[in-house]
Image (cartoon, rainbow, N blue to C red; front, side):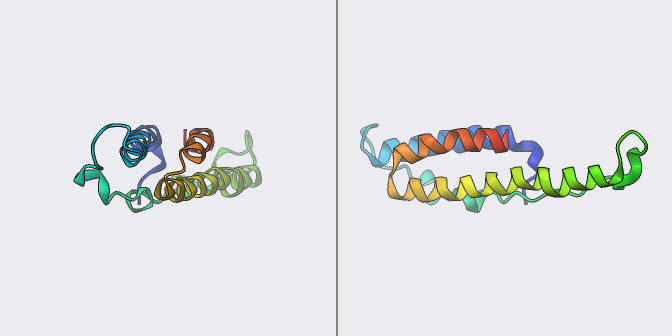
Length: 115
């Protein structure tokens, strides 16, 4: 649904929402979870998919072979997206459990795979 190009903004927004939810659950902010944040599910906000290239894999030959382009796009790039989605799923689970140490641990995977 969301484009992978908006990953930095999405990551920062997710981090802010994540921090507010965890801190408010722990009572650290001195107030309950605001109604606007209570129903937010990170997986409900975005699902990342591998976008199609706007050109054929062989379009850059002879500089880059079509096979290398196909492998890079379908395997390498897809791995980043798969790992990013998996980290977001784990993040949501950790947030639902109030597991702040896992949330902090997942930030590096989210940043690495999502930008």
